[in-house]
Amino acid sequence: MSYYSSGRGGSDGYGGGRGGGYGGGGGGGYGGSSGGYGGGGGGYSGGGGGFGGGSNLGASLSNVDFSKHDLVAFEKNFYLEHPDVAKKSSAEADAWRASKQIVVHGDDIPKPVMTFEEASMPEYILTEVLKCGFEKPTPIQSQGWPMALKGRNMVGVSATGSGKTLAFLLPAMIHINAQPYLKPGEGPIVLVLAPTRELAVQIKEECDKFGASSEIKNTVVYGGVPKHKQVRTLREGIEIVIATPGRLIDHLEQGNTNLRRVTYLVLDEADRMLDMGFEPQLRKIVSQIRPDRQVLMWSATWPKEVQNLARDYLNDYYQVTVGSLDLSGNKDVTQTIEGCDMLTRSLRMDGFQARAMHGDKSQEERDWALREFKSCQSSLLVATDVAARGLDVDDIRMVVNFDFPNDMESYIHRIGRTGRAGRKGDAVSFFVSEKNGRLAKSLLEILNRTTQNIPSELQALAAFAAPKKGRGGRGGYGGRGGRY
Image (tube, rainbow, N blue to C red; front, side):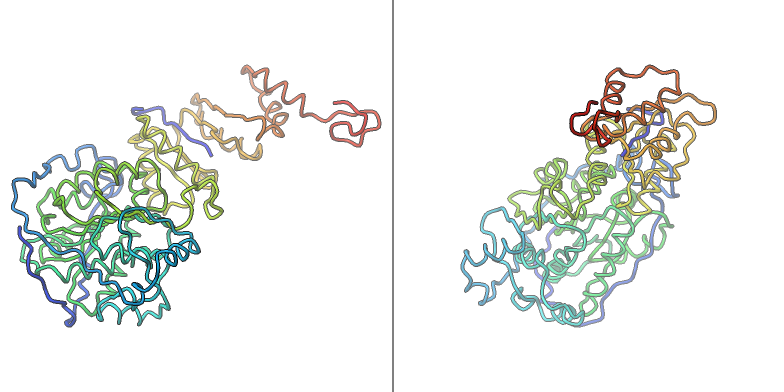
């Protein structure tokens, strides 16, 4: 893993209820799309949609003082424990969690449900679930559904593909059907924030599928396309809005929607949103939502930045973790990719505008990170070897080999990204003898062709590692009785 420096830029009352809403058409249209994720930092057209957006994005939105508003209480606890669940002992629940590598924290934690029937879902939702051919809930759904239906704030830490979308989406639909219908001009009841267009569209597709037999309407808003269709749809009254943070703030600033009716907030892939620089936008959006909302935060990892966000905005929350929080021991995590993200977070915490680029990120994210770097909105790009292949930036001033490459060919490729077109450039390498010692001689040979000073420690390591003939030796380091 290496990182590159461009050398430029600085380091109302919602009482009542619907009574179910089982029949009717529903679904809700796609709601169009909307423009630009370049924000102030370059990239796609449109104002204020970018990953992290521009520095003034949301500046016109004042934090709402909800103490000056009359907020009518709303119902958010819809959980009815199934008799079969009630019969199970706490020891049985703990044993099941242990078998699924589930760890829970919080007070009055509900027992997991083993079947869709035990989740006490309404008929209109259960019908759609059974149509999809699912046999039973995934582990995160088994524990997450009772938590969400109880109306409590919660943090879910689980890998992508674990079924977390339905873990927050089905309780959201039940929540909506307990609220009064929207009036013209009112904003959504459920807001789902996602880091990328791709994820937002995937969530919208799930909304369409499982909301088909209810009267719930949804739409998705993201950057990169014109706004006018989104504006029209938002003003029609949409119960569920799935959005990327930058574009949502753009709509809020222009008065195309508001968040006064939001009582159920989802932050999906919160760690990725923070990695992408969305924290200021997330905090601005949350400031527009009543403080007694229900918040569900989902993340694949549990870094300090996500913990801080949870501490600030989730009071008295449940936490459910599927798998290990120690990613260094998780065989399903590519260590180079995780190291890339961790280094980026560390640099950002130290005040550097760093961006990460690796194979686990979508093409959309990689394109954005490269645009940010090329336009000098970001001065540091942290990249894996695979993601950095084909990187074409002329004015890179420095290459830092944070993790020394596994072979000298990769080393040559890396350092060749600086000093292009006759310009001067620097390459700095962290060379760890225990990990990289076998490459010491090859590195020394390359450095000897230059006029730079060579550390004496590297020369000694190369001499120590070089094989020499010994008496009676079998090669290598001299064998029996041989010398180095």
